[in-house]
Length: 116
Image (cartoon, rainbow, N blue to C red; front, side):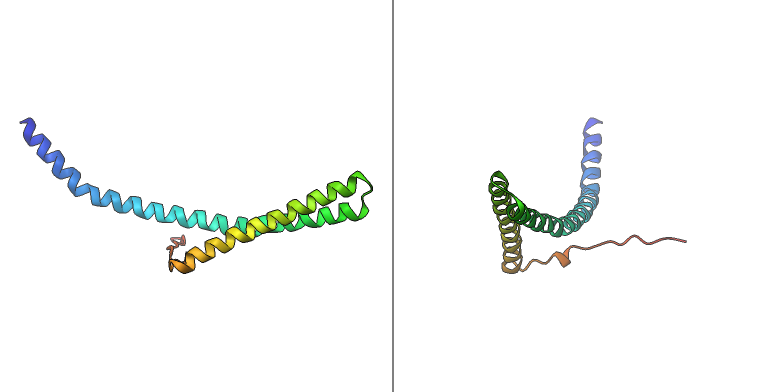
């Protein structure tokens, strides 16, 4: 009797496993698309913050006296470092996408539709 239950459970698992795998894959694809959208919003914001930081350092350097000039130099250097890092990471990602023939447009996007 127990052997029959194990066989039925085994068959049940084998029949439902592809359905579960498909659902998991679909949800993972949607999650990756959502993360890509968030990153696409964050990159220009980070780039803008680095530019603002650099120009803040320039202003602090121009109008600062003594200790203010040194602090302005440090802020400018860190602004340039931030711009370099952001653009380098962006370039590396673009290089990887182009070499592996990957496009962010290949991630399927599901647009919610209103039902009436």
